[in-house]
Length: 194
Image (cartoon, rainbow, N blue to C red; front, side, top):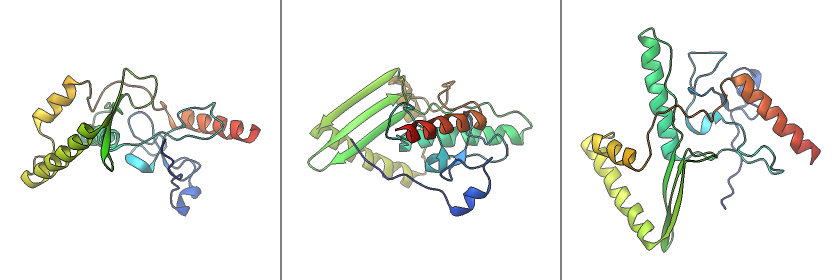
């Protein structure tokens, strides 16, 4: 397993409990939008996602991978565009995970859709081929940056074929920041009991 220290937001975050969670992270609903301030959206490691396992004595936050953050960014961009056009935001990130990682002499690849349980797809592979896949991806990523095509149609199509889409109707995030607050309060009470 991987142990990562808890991220905390800036000190100013404690001054507004409608916008920020207990650790200074931006509270969002399933559209990555703050309920109290609808013009504020959150993406990535700055967002407050309730703990994955509420019964665990060790508080475990939701892991945030690059692809998951990419799905959040896609949803936010779509929702902001909708608001500019006078429509209500409706895009929801899929929160799928695809990760290629290097472990020295070998590597690992995992895919989880959605990232948080219950999952429809849960796949893991470790070995030298995974490291080679990571090296190939790095070259491909740099090619995309050099050519300026960071979102090619063929990439979206290939990801779709293996079950990864950036947007869908997955409802793992709380429907409101009030629900997120209730889940966080429950986690704190369980922690205090143990």
